[in-house]
Length: 323
Image (cartoon, rainbow, N blue to C red; front, top):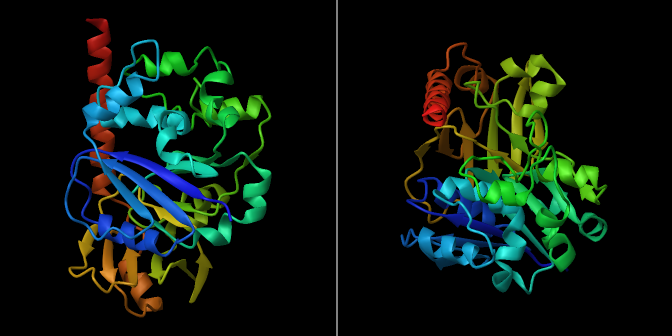
């Protein structure tokens, strides 16, 4: 059996829904998570989630010691650019594992073993291609890809690691002009597996619509949807006419989305429901519930706030550069 570990540096107060994330980890007994954090809150960590208490400055020092040049790591957010290097940088913590990965905690896992099979692990060196979940084979060759695959559009790891700009180097595909690991592995024809079994929820819509749904059809935007976690399984429930269509998902990712937590006691939680934009204790849902609670709204204030903040950051960055 393959041994797999996800590496997660996280600094500051862990989010209120972290307990639910831990519960979803606990059912994936064939997978491990290693968390580096300065939040010493006493959570109910399952046996497969290993917490190592370190400050951001200690992690910065650990990473700096791996390079002969001075790195730029002024904030925890910049760690996203270092994700492809985690296998190299944190090797002392993952020596016993066959695969290592990076992932986010603003998500809920389903049954990973259904989607990450022994056949996939045997045949691919890189599995998936998103910052919120990617796996790499743990050997010296693959662990050095971030620095040996060369440049893409003039950008390489040294450029990324010495700049305070966020390059999304862990992904870098799609419309990002400077490239990143997704483009580099494609150029070098590396053995990568990139099926999309997860639901990455679009931030611009008030209801739950994944990016793959939008790419497939604009009709999905207005379909009411909710997610149910049931003892390690994650199910997407979408109202299609008068019928609820149920599909199993590897995980659901709530990027930059405000999710209220209406669960107080986590001690015996093995089932819960997620709908826009709340976590609730489990109950039977029906057509009327989905129509009422999960419908598409034209005006979504949270997204407007995010757009305004991003615009403000861009303007400040341009002003700073000119000065």
